[in-house]
Image (cartoon, rainbow, N blue to C red; front, side, top):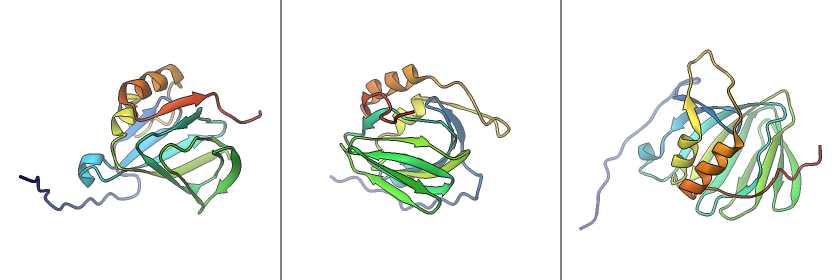
Length: 163
């Protein structure tokens, strides 16, 4: 017997979606939860301030796509650094070592994870926030613990950027 799914649609206007403070630094506004796409993908907008940086990591079972809506980031993809600014995008396929750093005052990224199997990592490493809150505590220990529990991310080492 095969499972069937019911077609659904999701419409969210600019600024709509649940807002959460991600412990890695940044306000995440959820646009499509994994369940809403039957697990095919998840999508969120990530608003981050200058200096936000990620450790070098991989997603073993997920492709990660960023589209830069505003600002600029420095991407480290498999040993190569590239600046990606407004209108640009990057794709880190599953298993590809990557990291990024926000180089502009503010950056907003549209992030798509395919499939949506990594949602528990992001949810476990974030807290719901009110519309008037734009910051919170950065807690890389929480990120590492969530990554270990979910298996959605493997941290390979510290941020690879020279400061």
